[in-house]
Length: 114
Length: 114
Image (cartoon, rainbow over all chains, first blue to last red; front, side, top):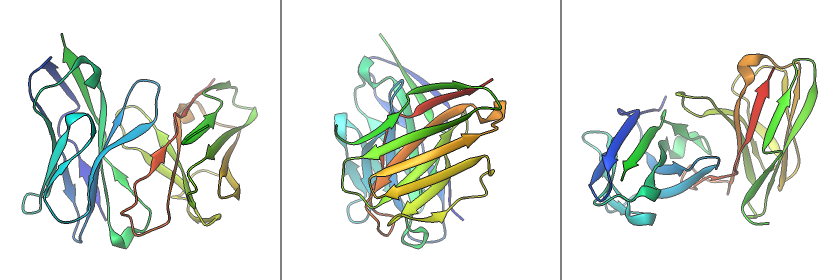
């Protein structure tokens, strides 16, 4: 079975500061990894995904994530956050063996402080 | 309309009511999903339809009944719900595949059961 752990439920950060949101996954097979963002009163929107190849993945809105197989992690980073980045962030994992099924973490609430 | 749409956006119902949630995707996908999102919990996959056939239901109570009349439409019929069923219900769609294809989400229906 696969699972995702998002270690921080809430992350406050000042505007223009860097941020890292942590995600660890549990899987015994090869994986695909995703980060989604959810703004208030909206559905989830894809930020970026890792399927294969380069372990550093760049996404929308200046976010990037690095796949680390040895540490089973896929942390999300942004060098300088904006007020508009305040949202809920979800990490998800799937694999070739699970078909269409995604496994989501509990989410990290990012609050950017002016 | 573009993407994935859901109606209604908000629904309040009593425990004896019968209501339906509607989802429509305009992306040409052939797989659709219902998720339940509760505070501080991972997204719970309720139902998966792939090529209009249900392939997953994850032991969801029978008071939730899905219907997928075609590849663009998905319904969730609700009857005799419980207060603990109050949550955000998200619909998603994707292209059938090996787990590498991202899921696109609608804005959700906020359900309150009194």
